[in-house]
Image 1: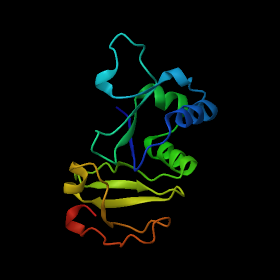
Image 2: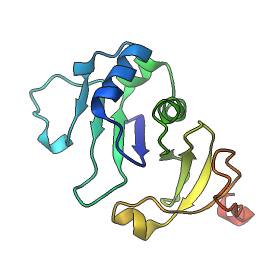
Image 3: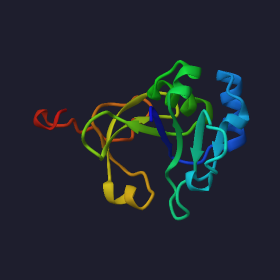
Image 4: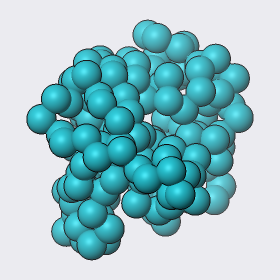
Length: 154
């Protein structure tokens, strides 16, 4: 999996499909919306999947994609997250590439981004709670910045 972009709140699925069609030429029927477990294995392979969080979670609407999504958008995960965050005015997180499960790249609604430390306990129950940023994020001036110590892979 190349893309796993998690959104702070739901993007209306019809609006997401329209955006992907108008911006990247992805046919609306090529974007599966729903739980992966509910998808029939006989269905055609989608270009992207937009999955809801568990019933008791607020955070976790996720856009999932693989090489087909990369090929059609011509964008990496972060660039696509930035485009979607700007278009839908919703914050998103993507993997920061580190070995730390509580570190993410936060993409603000204005498209600015930076590494953040999240509360693992809150995430386990479906809430995105930023503990602090590891670097300044221009679109999130309210988030305190506490740089990671050098020994922690800063």
